[in-house]
Image 1 (cartoon, rainbow, N blue to C red):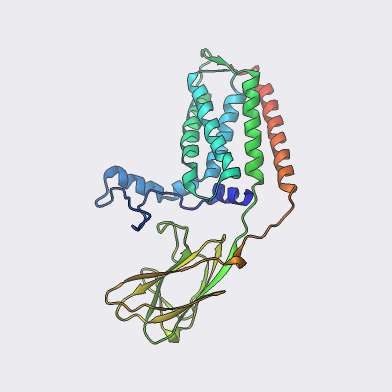
Image 2: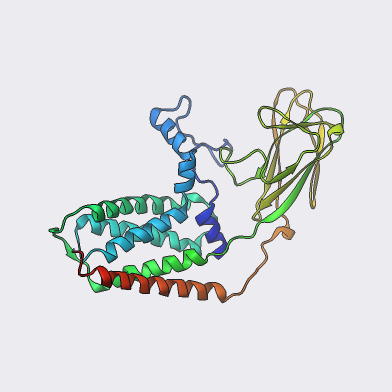
Length: 321
């Protein structure tokens, strides 16, 4: 659970669900993309940008909540209705985020939508409130009990986020071997959980021998060009291998540990064919480390954070309203 939580925070799968999936029996929905509206286009630009990739990860949500709650808790003795709202939504988002250590079934970004939405709103209000100079504000007394509860929540957050274990990647090798003189085109070799717009052509390290790379970054080869070998780091996920198809395409042998399949890529018209290599029992995540080191470290981080916040609060108590 700790390893899955770490994956969810730092590198979640499918960091945007904005793009329509391929239609099949399970999925049959879409956004307006043909042609896209102005707001749709702007949203697409943002969700595919490096800015969103950096700021849109749950670890950033957690840090923003800890900082925002810390600012309002330590530097305020009286809070107005806006600050009270900011504290409420940040606590809600942070509790929602931390709960996935115990109940999540997948490292999917979609589980953190509310956390990001609520924490960013609350954090913005907190920053604006702190930098504004208003010493005559009317509001609610920040009681010792409320401050204690927020300090405990921040301490738990620091402890759980700081000590979440990294999920060890399992390196799986996939080899693609042309078996006749006709062309073989490899479009993608990647983890099946990664959306198309986020993925590279090849996930991991590739040894392409004499295969040619065209302008679309596709790998093209025949039997004389040798074997295309890739090493893909996964977390017990399926690997998808996508080939180009057409009249001039040949046959290819796909191998990966216990998987072995000959694929005929010839077809009346140009298109694609995808082969899924599912994980076997040999790809299970093995237990590692000690059972008590993680909880003990989380407890130490939590207590240290609580004591630090209490000290900062005492230092600024006489200086801020």
